[in-house]
Length: 313
Image (cartoon, rainbow, N blue to C red; front, side):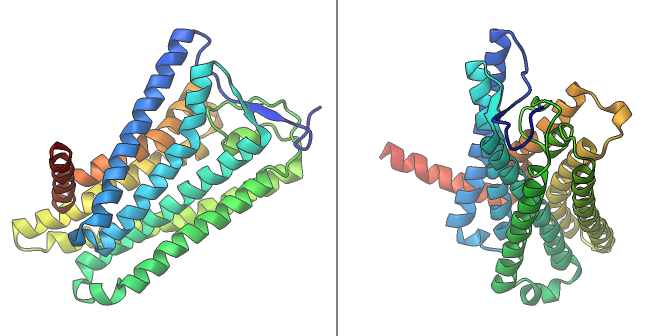
């Protein structure tokens, strides 16, 4: 039986055996990746170039766009390659690298979403202390902590997962390397329990962050409802609703994908959920944030107008 030390490659999920559908999947992945690259690239450029967007909120949004780009660039290129060339293989080293970077970017994104919730809480509930609590140094430290925690979690998860002996074949029921799919190939009961325990610790930490976000938003909405003017309430909701929408989409799809009961699991459901939290969510985040952020829309419009003017001249 093959084990993790002798296995040379894994087999990823084949979307279809028909060449026409394989090409359709390729164009679908290409469209999603281009949308994510364009949207997140515009946010990165606007925040970096426009002085009006050098605020803590936009600083963290810049980092969030980096994690979204990282998620897309980790999973989509290999899926596009396999769909275009009609293959399903990924090397053992490639699978380990893909798993590491995906967990790294996903973990960092969740930490950033938690920090952004704290930013919203301070901005609305402790407005007078905003500059003190969220100065440039504090923002840099929080962003660094988010990236560092993502790196440590990815390193632990990847090392532990690929230390397991694998004897249940090499076929993964997913279009990218994902921890639950690799665990299904394990034949080590103690190693499996160790990895489940590590996932449980990560889940508890994530749940603690989620509880913090829920508590923060309860306080935020209580404060918003006490604002006397309609314009003030509208501005506060415009600040909070995009973040709440992104958090909801990310948490619901990601949590349900990993913690759903076995009796409702199916290959099509697993695939749909993975597509939502690994591809669709990073592509939609720029649209969600730009819809109600007038300053960001103005900066993007100004930047694109300048680019077109230079191209014409």
